Length: 179
Image (cartoon, rainbow, N blue to C red; front, side, top):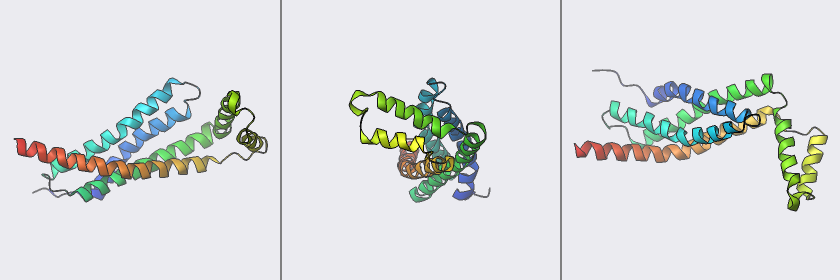
């Protein structure tokens, strides 16, 4: 009889490849201003992330003969997202700090130019406030963006993994009783 792995060990093991997947999406996002087609790639990768977690949850159900509870699958999904977000955050931070140190400033400058070019918003107080922020060097730090990315992925991953865990159990039960 083989020893069963805990959901925490499985989540850590699957969090690394998932983190590399999210890292590719983060790098594509960071360079999306230079190559706009990467933005489509990022959107497709974001849509596929829950599918990957669903597959990990299904694999766990198969390996444990369907005895894993919804709560355990959900927790595993949350941890996969958190481990993945941690790996992707480290990669994104290293890239922003060492390769593209002006990333935040460039993105805010681009956003402001697009915002100011819109006729209805060209003279609004928000545009002026943003311009003042850029002129005074009050651009958010890279770590702020990376931490926001980490918490965004972790939060929405926890919500999505509840759904994917429910779906994985439902599909497993349906396929088990069909046969």
